[in-house]
Length: 111
Length: 114
Image (cartoon, rainbow over all chains, first blue to last red; front, side, top):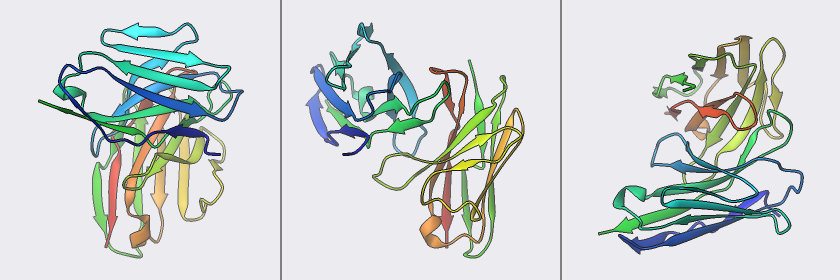
């Protein structure tokens, strides 16, 4: 089983749509979880950390279910500029452990 | 905010030559840096963990003699791809940790070996 699994997509949605991405991770000892955004041929950039209580940042909502080892990202009122690849990322362990990346889910928002 | 500078951003080299990639933390000290590689349509994969003042830790399948890592100061880690071959062509990215949530990425280096 892969360490971090995501649906690769692509998700093609119209502007204004709500879209949800899911991710599962295999290491139950993982403590830190993130969603990163990566534009084509660019470095990943942190979108948001994911907390056990769930967290929201504007149009973006992240949820964590430790029991199911499942992370989600919800994007409301999607914009053209949201088009990118969204990476589910899990800390590999330790206080400064390496990050383990999913393959990413590609989102394309159309006018 | 924390900034990590990586250069060069792209490089084309001939087979058999060596290429050095630098990763600098500009406004913080990074005792640990990570080097990743990303092939087209693939996920970022950790190559090695670079620790200041000690030997790097390489992931399984990554040749330490081919990918030389030096982390001689708290603000600089370098990755040297030795005797590069076309199959080494990839996107290399460094990351510095500032604690469990404080990961900052360099802008990446696109290496093309011809």
